[in-house]
Image (cartoon, rainbow, N blue to C red; front, top):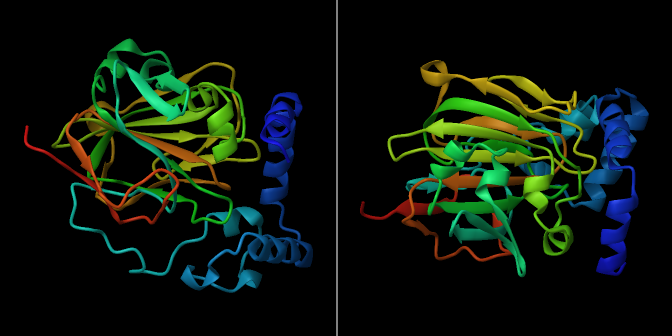
Length: 283
């Protein structure tokens, strides 16, 4: 399908209705029908079930159970690095936040201010910092982990659209990640604050965190904010912090400007959770 047509359809399709229906189907426990659908999905997307803690497709009572499957213990050892990759997926873009702007794709940038929901004080904490945008495809492992140890200080649910976040849409939809629905998680660490922004998308039926459970749905028209201050949970590097019910995108923000990203990283390249993302330079 031509990219222009794919983008046009994204504007025209009833994305919220499709996502609602997909969420209902994903939670449905349909016995043999659900198993058949999961099997077809796994074949189509070449899901590496040998990596799953439970490789038997018959063991998953719903699509949500399958989407959020755990990996075998020890399968993703953590690299010796200041920052490890939080997900399995592909690199969209990474680099410096310049003038409060994040690079999305050729010809497209969006503001940190818009991404975090319009909080100027919060956005200023990442002024001239660093970012990494990581895309999780439908067949990927859908849990999100901590790139470094940190304490949760705030969570923000920002309502928005539900465009697909695949590479075609990233190239063609201006400000994509700052206009879609998203859950912004702010952490404090010994090396300064960092954020993990879990971006929703078409047919991503749910976004959840380990401390709150399901954040969305329901989908509200107003922004919701949870301030944890000093009482937020402490999470170790590599610990699970959230999950998508299907694939989507994570945007990581770091206040430190001198992140030296892994020399193996390049846009479009595959990544695995626990691999070295980068290190901090001298302060």
